Length: 133
Image 1: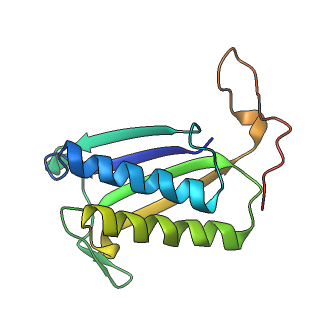
Image 2: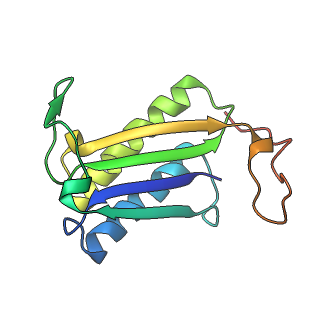
């Protein structure tokens, strides 16, 4: 059920380049979290440059206007090693697919209980989900 929210500066990613970002993120989710292909939810936000504010460098990273801020929400229960592998997998795939510097990927993972998600009809379909390691 991962939900990926992709935030970029308006005009930096045309439809082909953002499609590469999208595909790379989904491929990483399928590879590392083992989600099926039909488990696909993404929101793409484009902000004017004056509404996408960030430092130019932090903790050794150097950011450009290609910076992607990615929020990924999924059902809790995966071990720390899997989450760390997901961060690396997303970064590697997006950098390669879309020609983005590995520095230009700020990723935040959010884990929520299955009972906090409804796929429709107000039901928590994954309330008793056991997440694979």
